[in-house]
Image 1: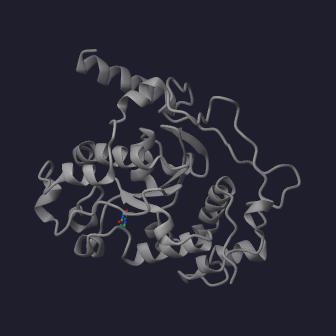
Image 2 (image 1 turned 90 degrees about the vertical axis):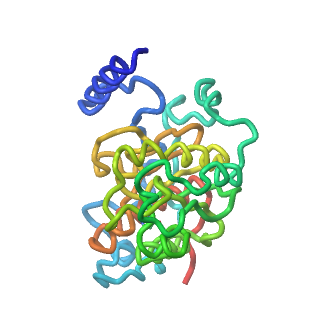
Length: 290
Ligand code: URA
């Protein structure tokens, strides 16, 4: 299709999807709740959070970033799961998606292809390319926005304040950092920690897609708007679809708030913990005991 027409069609589809019409095709946003509380399951009501949930939400200790090391007592198993209607969370990639995959691709090859990248303007201010870290066999991939100052210096994602909170979240799920894979939409630090710009995302995100294709995780957890909007190809605000399940190239995808947002809004930790519990239910994880 001629590029101008394609952009116009895409804009109309996005408009339709914002109005709640569609979905028109698979990689676009498909709000389906794959893991739902079964009647009577021990799931907290939003209106009446229990003591334990309040503790996880940091509401008993406002401002504490340690709340995630003390998950509520109720194990993930108490959250029953019910599959979404057939087809909405396909486990196998469609032919179209499979054809996008690069045969024999590896994380090393992707890193090698990135090289000493100058493809976008972010390279001018970076110290290190922040590629990603963790297990290439991870069942769970966390995707953030882009490196901050600490990450740029160290060359590793999520090692600053927000990163410490993410590590606590991972540990509260009964995992270690090295069990999961952590990466970002853009691999170089945006100046002054501004949001990555559209051209930067367009240039860098194909490397993220390749990383996901190589790892083929069971679950992708998008941290914040940038990651979720990039992977779901939507302009909708994250609060519209946070905590819902989507299909992304054969993986289940869920979006939750970014840990940096939680540092500013500790009251939102409870909502994030609920999202993480959904992930734990899918992965069969039990929360870490104190
Ligand atoms: N925020 C992100 O989105 N990514 C990082 O690596 C660090 C902070």
